[in-house]
Image (cartoon, rainbow, N blue to C red; front, side, top):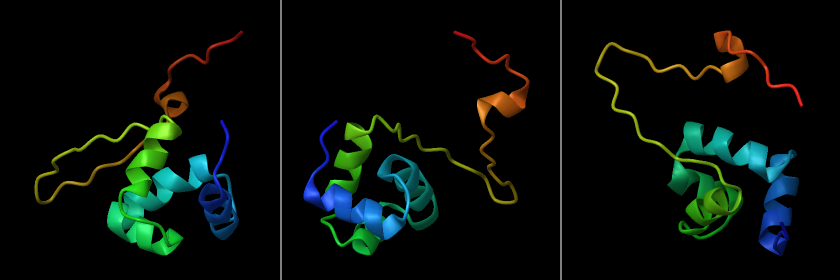
Length: 82
């Protein structure tokens, strides 16, 4: 995928590939603050998520509960080979 100048600048600011930095920042800061941190328009973050095929899902968590994300390989799911 061809990256725009803003994408390249965001990657430099994050210090890692944008496809890796986007979900981390989106989950910790939220979309609005992530956009401010990168210095881009608020609509840019969802657009980048779409371009990098990063799914966004919402989960309602009741008070007193915590949501944890665990990679599939930590769930005992056999690794695909080939």
